[in-house]
Image 1 (tube, rainbow, N blue to C red):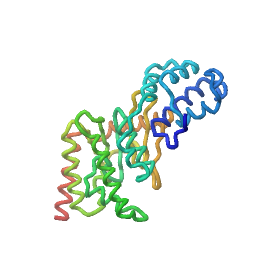
Image 2 (cartoon, rainbow, N blue to C red):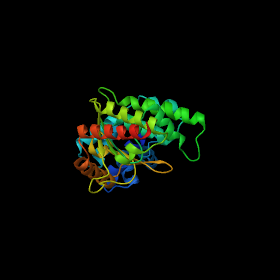
Image 3 (cartoon, helix red, strand yellow):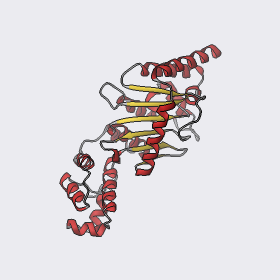
Image 4 (cartoon, rainbow, N blue to C red):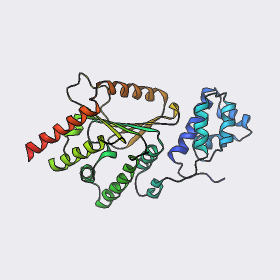
Amino acid sequence: MPLRREPTLRQRRLGTEMRKMRELAGLGGSQLARALGLAPTQVTQMETGKIGVSAERLRTVAAACSCSNTPLIDALAEMAVERRKGWWEEYRGTVSSDLLDLAELEETATRLIAYTITFVPGLLQTDAYAASVFARAIPPLPQHEVDVRMEFRMKRQQIIRPNGVPYRAFIHEAALRMQFSGPKVLAEQLEALIRHSETPEASIRAVPFDIESLPGPSENFIYAEGAAPELDSVQIDTTHNSLILDSPAPLASYREILDRMASVALSEEESRDFIRQIKKEIESKHG
C-alpha cells in the first residue's frame, strides 16, 4: 500500500488517537507491533496517518491497548472508514494547509463555538468586511490570493445553514467596534450579525467592555466538538499561522473558558440590542 503524501486532518487525528491509546496502555511501538503481528514501521505509519486503518484493525488496536471507551472506539471506527473527499480538497495547493485543516475541522465537527476579540468571526463575515480584513495583511497579499481566500471563506460559511453544524459565537465588543474599511462596511457587517442572530442556525452573544473580568485568552479561537469528547479540538489564530490543539489539558482549559464566558456574556436578545446600539452609534457619528 503506497504511503499517503499529505494525510488529511482527520487521518492524522485518527493516528494521534491510536498513539494516545498505546501510550496510555504503557506500550511501546515495537510492543504493539508484536501484538498485532506487524512491523514497527507499520505502527509508526498508522500513527502518523501515512497509511489507512480499517475499522477492524482499529478495534484490534483498541483491544490490544485495553481501551474500553466504547463511544471513542466507535467514533474512531467511523473515522477509519471515511472515504469521501471534502470540498476543500479542490483548493489543495491553492490555499495554505492551515486553511484546509480549518475547513475540515469545521465541516466534521458536531458543534462549533467561536470567540473573537479582534474581528467578527470568519463564518459570519460579509464579503466587504472579509475583503477589508484580508487587505490589512502585512505584507500585503496579491490580489489573486485575496480573491481565492474570499472564495474559500464564502464556501466555509455554507455550514451555517438549516441542519448544518450548530454554531455559537461569543464576540467581544472590541471586535464589534473595530473598523477595517470604514464605518459603512462595519455598519453593514453589524446588520448582518443581527440577521444571523435571528435565525436558529446561529447563536450570537456579545461580551461587553464593562464585564468585571475577561474570562478568556487574548486570541481568537474556535472550539470544535467531536463525536466523542476526546475528539474535541481547539483552533487558535496566531500572528503567522493557525494552531490546532487536541491534548486533554488545553481542551479542558478551553472548555472552562467557554463555561465562564457563557456566564458573563449578554443573552442573545440583549446581544442583538447591544449590536443595534453600536450600529446606531456608528451611523450617527459618521452619517
